[in-house]
Image 1 (tube, rainbow, N blue to C red):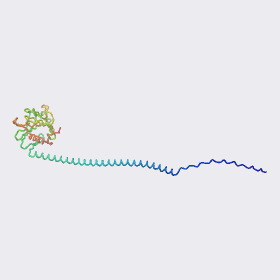
Image 2 (image 1 turned 60 degrees about the vertical axis):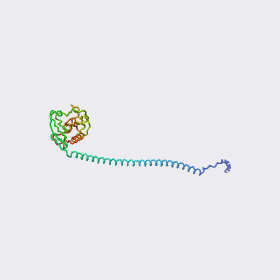
Image 3 (image 1 turned 120 degrees about the vertical axis):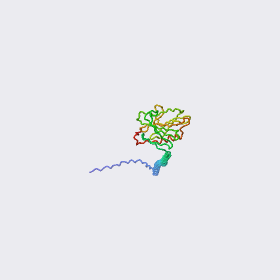
Image 4 (image 1 turned 180 degrees about the vertical axis):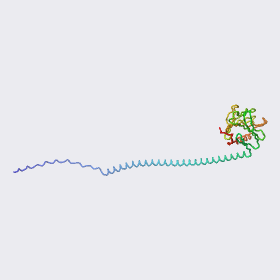
Length: 283
């Protein structure tokens, strides 16, 4: 027989310790925290955005001011350019008017003057209708020594003489002009800007006595070795020497201002005839 099993006594259960209920974070606090956080972040972002917008507005304002200033400056430049163009055109018009007036004045000055042409030395000039002209050759003269040639222009009353002497540069036997100024008590050198062909007479030496002009030497800033006075004017392949003098009674005659102007106009009418075989390359 099977033995009868012994009954098993159940182990007494140890009672569990009581657990504390878990606290729950209130939902409202979470919501408030989220809202505050969002407001702070949003506020900061809005503040930064406003700063950027303000800076952008400032930049736009500055750019607008610069654009306005640039427009004003450009308008001023355009106005200045317009004024310059207008002034330039006015200056051109004035210059043309001056040239026309000068040509008209020249034509008026030389309207009744006589023409003189020297075919041997290839030049021409004008002189007043009431003046006389005479050509002459000189030798063993203080002016050119040998092979010299002169053209004399004399006023109507024969009290003023303009003596134009000339020679070729290749003529080694000829000397240049010199003048001692005997009888003169004072002398003065005056700068000039007087056209003589394609050259310019740059100065003249005036010899006077008792405030009366007796002699005038016209020159081109070339000093004569013998006298120390400026003497020669180089034109083409020639040398020219020019002197004006009062003739007749030394005490009473003189070259007046009006006669000096006539002499200047005679010299200003000088022209080289380029077709002449005597002319050469300017030096």
